[in-house]
Image (cartoon, rainbow, N blue to C red; front, side, top):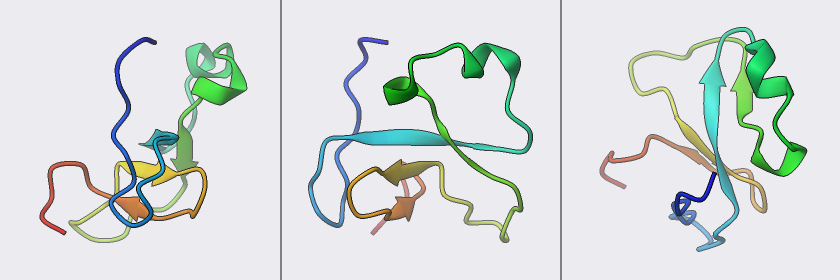
Length: 66
């Protein structure tokens, strides 16, 4: 995983991870913890976040307007 990660729009921290909705896939469990995505169990409406900041916990939908 050498792709550049988006920075948090709230605090500017570069350590963000994707959010995976639903049950985790076995291949994701084999990733180093630092590269594992976050996971949400329940979906909340149409504007579900797809990124989370590891520093401040802010969640957002990448590409959505702030």
